[in-house]
Structure formats: C-alpha cells, structure tokens
Amino acid sequence: MTQWMQKTYRASSLYLALITASALAAGLCAWSLWRQFDWIVLLFLLGCLYATLTFSVQWRSHVTLDAYGLWLHSPLQRRRIEFRQLDAVHEAGRITRRLVVTYHPLQENGLVDLETLRAVALPAVERQDELLATLQTEGPHSRS
Image 1 (cartoon, helix red, strand yellow):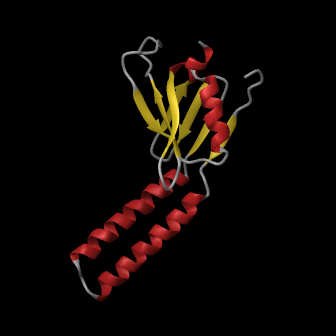
Image 2 (cartoon, rainbow, N blue to C red):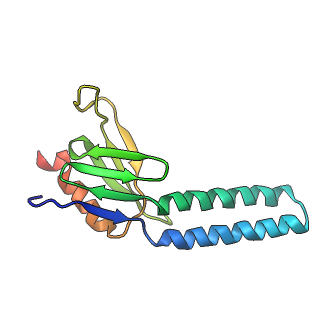
Image 3 (tube, one colour):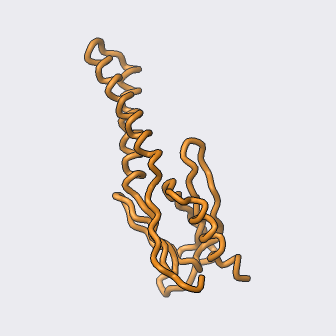
C-alpha cells in the first residue's frame, strides 16, 4: 500500500451473543445439577463453561495491521507475523467465519524459514472482508 496507517480490527460483536448463550446454558446446567445431580449434566456444564471462556478470549482479541505485517493481540498471546512470512490466508468456520493465516516462521538470524509452515486462526473481526483483501494483497505471492 502506498500510505500506511496502523489499522485495528476489533472482534466481531457476534462473540457477545455466543458468550451470553453459553453462559445461559451453563447457568441452566448448574441449576439442573443443584436440583438433582447427573453426570451427563455435569459434562454439559463443563462444556458450556469452556465455550464461554473460549468465546470471551476471542471477544477480547484484536488484529492490528501496520506497514510491515500484523499483530494478533489476545489475552493469552501476542503474535507478530510480517507480510513477507505469509503463505496463504483463507476463511474457515461455521458459526464464526475466521481467517486462518499460514506463514513461515522467522529463523534466529531473521530470515524466513521456508521449510516450516505454521498456522494461526485470527478471531472473527469487524470489516473482515477488508482485512482478508489486505492480507491477500500484501502477501509475498501477490508480489511475484
């Protein structure tokens, strides 16, 4: 791009609905367990709590683009991927369409390790089509 400003893409508001639904389901499971213990309901309660935690982490995450690459900011990790490391970017998922970025890691000397390929799933973000187009445009395969 000719003029680069730092752009931040916030997580989709769909995560709030998913957090609410999974927390409500966990509450119903807890109420059912309080009335009468059942192992299956306990298993569902653990699944609902895991879903609530997972959706909460995704909701608190965001992606920042700058002139040289992207940052994934999450409560659990902070990852930097430069445009020169990108291999491919595509959408995946059913409930929340997320971007999956495959990239080559950097070696200790700063060179791209072309023999190794890693992947990271970005959270579903607002203006995701714009982010996808930018990543596909700025990737190394688009410049060759």
